[in-house]
Length: 144
Image 1 (cartoon, one colour):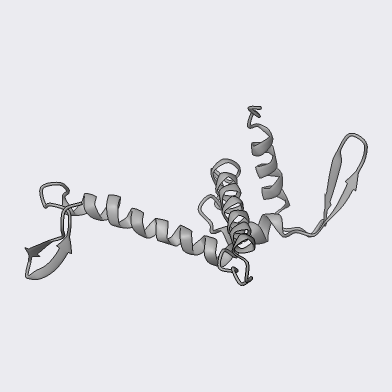
Image 2 (image 1 turned 90 degrees about the vertical axis):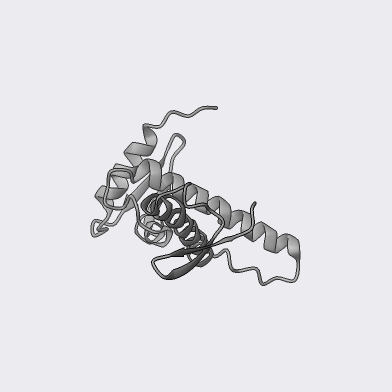
């Protein structure tokens, strides 16, 4: 990577490794800097909402396992957001919102020989959303 080049524009000093001829200002802001900020927000979301910051044991393997679980949970929630919540007003919500509204729900679980049945409370406010997401996920073909 080339060393940073100091540019003078409109009386303001800026430091960047990109040449002016590579990007116009709007493209640079929207494609490079906003994308970087979005990545940083996703990392912060994983750390704070999926407990990736809990590496408090004395053994590296247990801390590493916690990080694997957190990363796996993030990937699952991201797939849920892209596949199940697409087209709803919850398509761009944070991981914590998905966890609280769809996953941390008190239900009665009944098992039979052929199926598992979930019974939600009649006062569960997101029942329609849960059913909508479930139908969308069931429509995805399994590739085994």
